[in-house]
Image 1 (cartoon, rainbow, N blue to C red):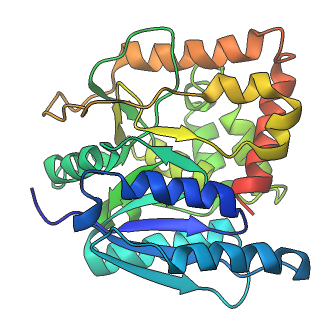
Image 2 (image 1 turned 30 degrees about the horizontal axis):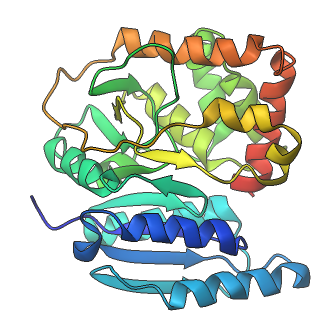
Image 3 (image 1 turned 60 degrees about the vertical axis):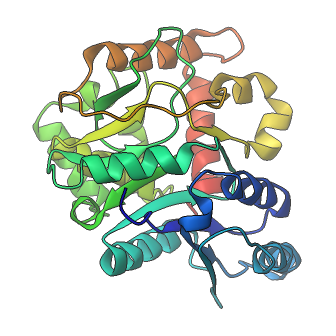
Length: 308
């Protein structure tokens, strides 16, 4: 295996989840060989300053990696600008990057899977990224598989992949409409990604992630997923306090053994796509979900917590 790719961890003002994310990452098989870059955004206001400083103190004391560099922003970029800037910098300097946020728990085999995927598909232009999280579908999934587009909960890419990223949501939305591809973009109408992209174009949210997905989707690029999740989300916060059933919708049991990364046909897996759609549909139709309303709450929550 080549030298492990650098890890970009984006943090803000949540000391507890940040510490848990770092502890899990440090327990990874390849952590001692991996350089870690921690991007700490500046406080939005004086009320956030204490928590930002607590997060930075936690990050300054971290060890267990090949190297650790803490980048402390003086001003608040917001997560979207912070991620775009950090990923652009690291892919330019290193050629590839593994990206995490401060509310993601990882399996000890997360870094191994990500690096194997990066190495195996490095020169395949059809593949835009590697993803570590997979929804807890009812259907059994292959050990690895491809889906069209890109994702945002524990992912990796190369410079050539990140070069595809476009931030102009209005242009992306117009091209999806011109192709009459909205239903396909929404996983057969089961998840309102088109609505999210429209909100981004109107300035109602600030989501780098929906633009990343749309950019890859429009270029017919594919992302490699694991059949067993190597990432679990731990940051539903206050929203999950009032909607614990929502948080359980997304809970995935972390893989306890390595995911085998072998060359497979570079084409979208129809069965896996259908399984994702069934998961979204089940979440929408659940009595606890109150139909589409819960999905719109998720969009607003993700925009507030992840995309500011």
